[in-house]
Length: 154
Image (cartoon, rainbow, N blue to C red):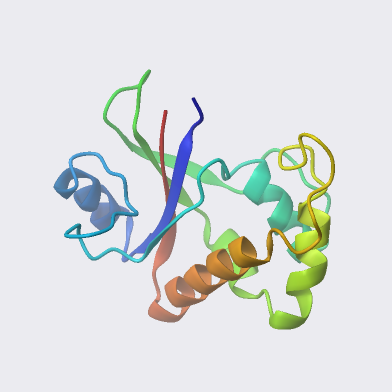
């Protein structure tokens, strides 16, 4: 069993927490008759390390443990989750800055990190749709003056 991660945008921390309460703890990315939330389901891509390494590539810096500044905002249960975290504005802006000319190289590099390439490097274009999705979400958040959030659950 893996950990699930949804990324979404909201006006502020209070709005994100209200959304969790309205959704009964999530998930944020819902289909069908669910709430209208601008969210993406990134399955096993957690924010600190896996997404953090993408952010490090975009910024042109070495990855470090606190590169993505996360703040735990809400938890249904400390041990079992789900949990809601905010991502810092610098992370949102770095992801929003990804342009079409960078995506292929970023996909190739990101597909070689240990957290994604468990049984060897991924095909160079495999992470393209994920990068495009997360960059588009970050741009929509930035352009609307909103923040990015991560919902996760065991």
